[in-house]
Amino acid sequence: MYSASFIFKPGTFDDEFHRLNGLIDQAAIATEGYLGAETWQSPDGACLNAIYYWESLESLHQFSTNPHHLEAKKQYSRWYDGYHIVVAEIIRSYGDDTVPHFTPNDRRKV
Image (cartoon, rainbow, N blue to C red; front, side, top):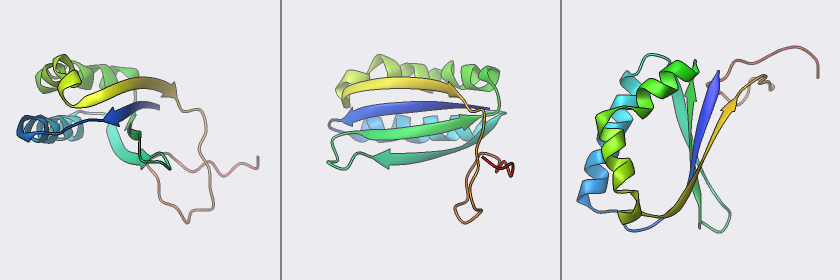
């Protein structure tokens, strides 16, 4: 299982941004191997982190080549004041089952 974190400084979002963003969300959900997404914000609100979860690198790659996604990437500087991507392999996930999550809950003792 993998995650792709899109960490960004929001700029000004216009109608074209919202149109493409909706199409990109639909494309992610329609991609085989997509598990879900969540968004976090820095305490000062300056940065956001959209984290997408994938069953495999192949499914993440398939999403990354979607035409709407590629179109938005070409225009990112219109809407963002900067960004950083982190792709990570998830090797373990666990908790007390009170916080639902996309990753499996490993019940082995830490």
